[in-house]
Image 1: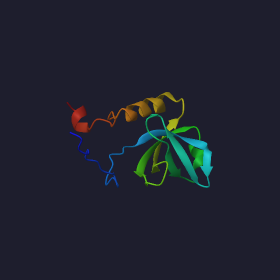
Image 2 (image 1 turned 60 degrees about the vertical axis):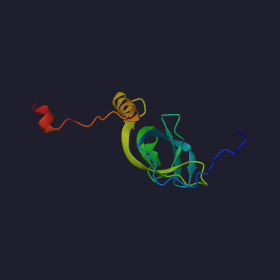
Image 3 (image 1 turned 45 degrees about the horizontal axis):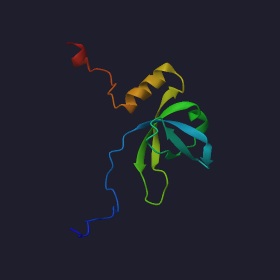
Image 4 (image 1 turned 30 degrees about the vertical axis):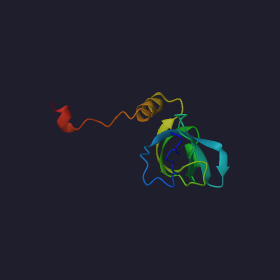
Amino acid sequence: GGGARPSGVVVGIVRRAWRPYACVLDPDSAMGSQYLAEPLDTRIPKINLTTRQAEMLRGKLILVSVDLWDAGHRFPTGHYVRTLGAVGDKEAESEAILIEHEVNCAPFSPQVQAC
């Protein structure tokens, strides 16, 4: 063979299987009301987040969902889902670990509890 190998270029991703990520807001990244949320999982890039509640979220573990990642942007854009608790809090850190490993920690239904 010396034939050319087939090749192609990715021009876009229609839908990505993003899930919520446990993050910490980086207060030093502020540009107006935009901040970078730093996921606990270091394999995930920082997530661009717009919020007016930065002071309330400082020092907290937060859940952030990725909405899109434009081709020309360094980081994906996402939105705040909820606060897990303070960084260092045992309950918040435990919930973050479960979320990061995609462990369903929803309470059991009354039907299951009745068994």
